Amino acid sequence: EMKGVYSNPEALLNRAAQQALFPDNTYAVDSGGDPIKIPELTFKDFTNFHSKYYTPSNAKIFFYGDDDPLERLNFLDSYLSELPASVSVSTDTKVAMQPLSIITPRYEQHPFPSAESQHMISINWLLTDKQLKPHEELALALLDHLLVGTPSSTLRKALTDSGLGESVLGGGLSDELIQPTFTMGLKGVKAQDVAKVEPLILDTLQTVINNGGFDQDDVASSLN
Image 1: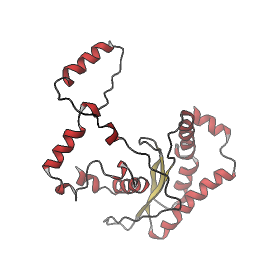
Image 2: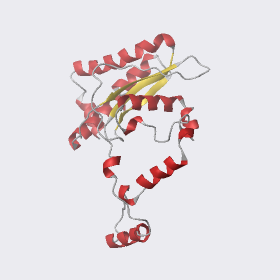
Image 3: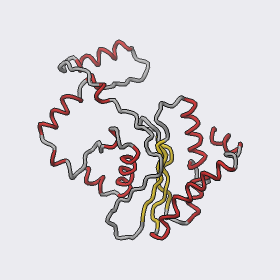
Image 4: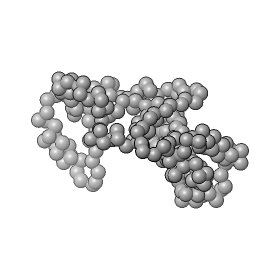
């Protein structure tokens, strides 16, 4: 399975970006394992890890619906009571906030064998090292839609119309992790155009700032 993942250039790019943005916490480690390193894992290490972390004390169980809560708990107890008691490991598995330690731009290059001499470029930001408030999350989602949410959105349109690559790369705002990130770029970029992608993205964002933001009709449309 992981060999298949590592044979996909976009998956490798996403992995490299995440490791660059989160060098100091769990997100820097590939959850599925690096195929090169997997053979070094002993069966004892594997079973020790499983017995320590795959326990009810380290699990979150979700229900939905309007059934009786007591029936839910009885249902859970019929399964969990058969398992041995375990010590909570919640402090060991908590994902720590990644400090905003990258002050100046950081550049990385990762080769990938391909029959075509084309490149993929992504520009990535770690947006905060603090827990966002609900109105801040909403503001980020709105900004993301205005920038990249539709083919006519400011940043997506600039990348598409530039002709520097075959297609847009990156989905903009990602809020699945403990800290939100923002990623955009292009794939299918010729060697002579690689250096033009970053300035295009940054200049487009600066133009939005210089123009005082977005048209109110566009904001209203994104809210709806």
